[in-house]
Length: 136
Image (cartoon, rainbow, N blue to C red; front, top):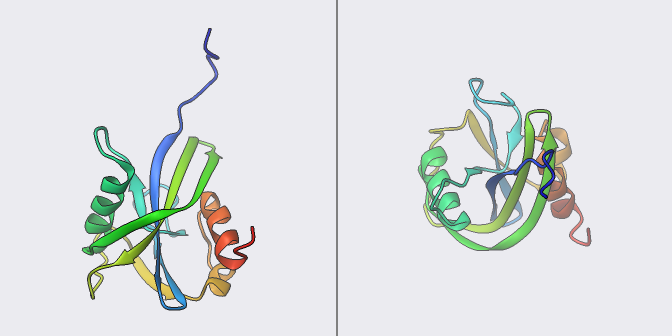
């Protein structure tokens, strides 16, 4: 019999987009859960979507940009007070030259060593750890 306490995690995607030595992070809008925190762009996978399709859609909706989804960079399970999430973080290549803040408060290109200076979503910490120290 299945464990009644098991809660299916929310499946979300994240894009690790690099431009030379820098990576892209975005700040969550004030009207969303975890307002003002920084994260890697992406979002939840809708029914019928593959994670790669969801990530491309989310980048279009949030940043008015197109990406090429390359490969899995990291997989993270995290339990927030509101429930569990499973993050599929993909290495991505930006295909468009301009980014517009449509569904994010702002974006920044930063060196991975600068990541600890930002208030980042707790679930993204393993991604940060791997960017700072690829041997993790």
